[in-house]
Image (cartoon, rainbow, N blue to C red; front, side, top):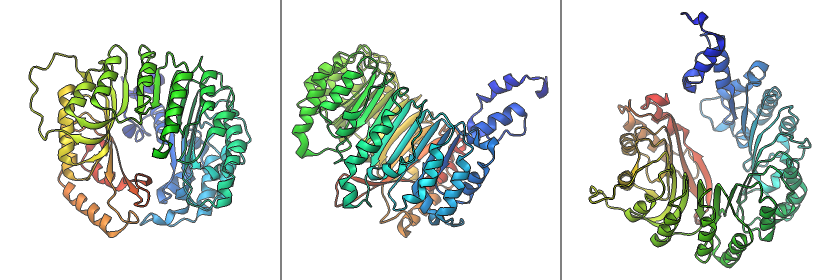
Length: 536
């Protein structure tokens, strides 16, 4: 049988089993694979880092045959004004980039997912034509993510007069604004009441998931208090200061449909401890959380007993539990795991004071349905080498799929001890995703990960910032050059790694604990890809 004898629909089925990295190259095989390759290449498009290749992509998007295949679009507006940062490429002015983006967006009639990330800059009005074009698209957007300083939402949504009749997921993320004036800060409440609340309420008939995140110091109570009734709302996630009775009222209004609820805070203010305690107690006492599949709570020492009672009412239905705020002691963690022993929990995110062998052993008592663990800690107390366990009860081991270790930046030796300890109580042979905070990005770290986690195909390494004021100073370039030289000759043919993300966070010494900038180090990923066949 030749290629021509195989029916079109069979080729379509075959294309679903081909890795996307390979599928995007199969344009010339036949009509079915051509269509699948085009869909794979243009399904997800990002407007950022406007170098020569990205400008070519914008021009390509003017062709309806390419534009109509875009289902997800990410727009990073900061990059519009920073084309000059890309060495070795043409410098494009912002007007040229905006015109190219408008031309590219106009043909995206099948757009289903839209992300707009507006980082701090002063050129707000220049982007209005782009936003106008986006909002007027004749496309049924199902998921919308908006990230911007609160004062900028007025400009961002000023032309969003249309009704999103098919919107199912909405995310509003309010960032810190370094450029807003005093007069703008005074009018922030007006932005919430006049812009954000009406915009959210317009999606009321179809909205199934709502996520809101704010920076510290912004009271989002006016928005929560003014939200209407969403008959299909199943998921509500909030990262906001204590909103008081308005949140209690909203939760009780949607009690019949809500199955996923999470509330956390973006930062901790010791001066507001009493208010936090009161808010948590009011929330747990006045809302009848029942049959929840996902539950996320910000709890304190005072509220721990009430939180345990709340969790106990949902043990049979819980599949995901996220506890934030409280640094759990071993006895508190032990009580929690004992409570969840008969559940079908698949994902747990929690915080402990000290990561130790006892903590890992306590976590191993959770049901074998557990697949994902996110563990945050302040201190680490593990032996450099974990001796083989003797007289260990014959308990069924968990097949972890995702592990996230955060809180303290680990050295390579500490990370080795962590992986060794987890391997004694959990099966890591099928671990697919691993996220961790590490001190240093070096070849020894890569060797460790490739050896201990050969089946892992996704990794996120959060490293300590190595630069000064920016990521292009001589010290960073020197370190990058040394890392590149050290990686030469290394080859990991058995490693399944396909996706890597390496970031560093810059902290301002005048604001302890507050992240100022998250930097994605794509240049390190490119070096790593030279040694990992599955990433090439």
